[in-house]
Image (tube, rainbow, N blue to C red):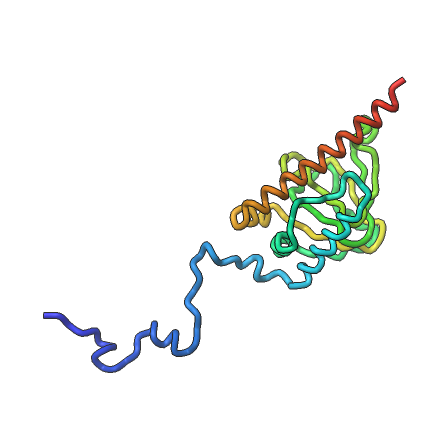
Length: 202
């Protein structure tokens, strides 16, 4: 003999019916949930697009220019953390591990390396809006060899290692293009250094 559920026999609506009666939405499947990006302020989106415009206008061969559409920049920006830094703030310290990728949106940073006396490739340089910092850390987990400070009030976007992993899991195509563009910036810097070395040879 079949029994009718108690809530039906007594006219008591089920919890599922109550959920929709209150206008609530069903919970998303875990793979569709992105708690990290939901907590990022919307202003970060504008900062990412500003960075993209500045990188596109930069005359530097080392400017970061991935093949991103506007929507791709919005997605990448949603994983980043915006940080306003005061003048003379030490962003990177030699010898400390740092796997964070940074994008310069405003201000100017001064970068020099502990190996600057041994390699032309490590000459000090200015990092201006449109430049990236820490791209080598995308391919290596070794300690940082750079000493980087802000010269003025600056705004940067940071993509820590954990959010890099989240980006790769959620948007593999954007993550792949990020790696490709970072590698292209490293290669361009290497070609520039080789040219300087050839000019310096007797």
